[in-house]
Amino acid sequence: MVQNLTLVGDALWRILLLALLLGAGLPVLFSAGVRAMAYGAGGDAETSHAPGHPIGKVLAVVCFAVVVAAVAIGITYIVASGFGKTLGFEGVVPTIVDK
Image (cartoon, rainbow, N blue to C red; front, side, top):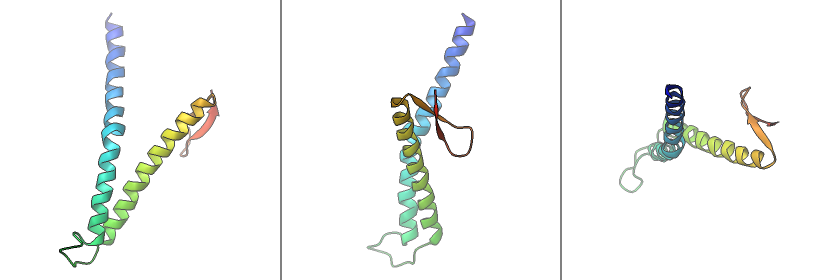
């Protein structure tokens, strides 16, 4: 009985972590990218004529790249499982391997 509760507890915290990371984390990261892009453009375009900050543009590109990569990996996972394959994360780049 205790072993079952331990397994359930282990599964629940993993599900919670993934839900927070993917369910709330990606939209927060995307909004941080939008905010960084505004910082890179010089703030409010209507009221300020301040020059843009290059670090804002770099941060925005990094945020958007992470979001696009997560979406691409998710779509690849879904498509690969439809073909009876799975994603392998042995290296730096995920690869499609047989089940």
